[in-house]
Length: 456
Image (cartoon, rainbow, N blue to C red; front, side, top):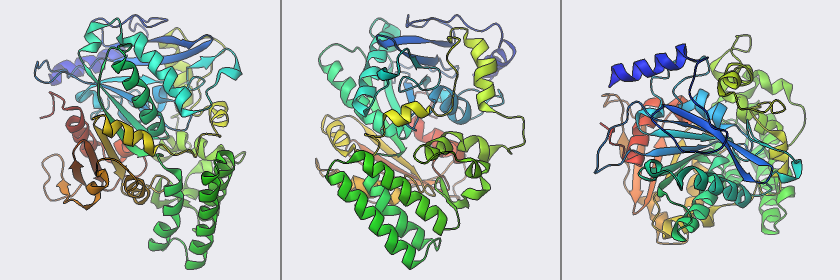
């Protein structure tokens, strides 16, 4: 199996100009290892997808091989670029094999969601989505096009994995897809939802930042008190459903804390954000944080003077490989137009959708990086404590199981708890991007969540 996977990787590297048959619209998959295309999810709204068939696939009738759908954050971050090449795909941003790719546990399906993100596009800017539900409708249409006429795909359970704002997309998609499955309009098995450092309850995160930074000695008592005042303003605005005002306020709160903590990094509170070369290149308030989110992985893993550039990769070799990207579509890490279109929904919580999925018996997994600040574990635990159905908040009081990795039983990599169909992983030493900071324990976690036949 290892030799076979190596040959696949070599083929991907050496055959970059030959490549696989592509499809302009979803036509299913065959025996090849990758497939991509566009689905017109609405008239003049085109969503790009890229599917990898795992070379590590194990056929086991008792444990069907899973498919993992990756939803990037932002909103407007490109899953086809960021999630694929910088986090979990078969090749990294230098087109070198990723040893701990999540293909070891599942097939991977990346999408540029919402439309207008990455290689996805709209022919009219008025067609950009404005809410999480609208994005979920488009994703549900995509899944119908890919799964409904493909028996092979229907045999594999689909697991929706999300990161950051992608968590809001994941739970709204879960609700939408489940409704269509129950109505017989969508033919797939929904295996579960996994929420990685997800922006499910912005209010709870806003209230977590001050106390957390105070405990870390990054801010003083006066700054903490002033941050509480800003957080209370956000709470009031959300109660009045003034979501755009709350978006502006949360940006102000973050800027205030960055300034008064001597530039703490919101994606890893052990770091200073002024070490990030992007920090001095902000252009306008409101979207700069989303730009920083989408470029963070590049700047942390590669020096600003290196030849590495994800944008050049996607608009150069990858675009040439895919062959079907329209000439007027330019790939961007973060689609500003998408973010701006969704500012009215950015601060809207999605706890009720989690409640709904749990009540329906869908497996929901939460995994969170220990040193993440923007989607802090403290904030996650706060919104979990607000779950209303089935006593699921009980998960926070149960005994935790320590996690280790790669035969090392002395170094704690995380903790785990479960209650009924709710699962929680605390990942030690990871920031906002868990697969990058802790790839080994992340991969083992994926195997556990998807019940992968290759989980040994």
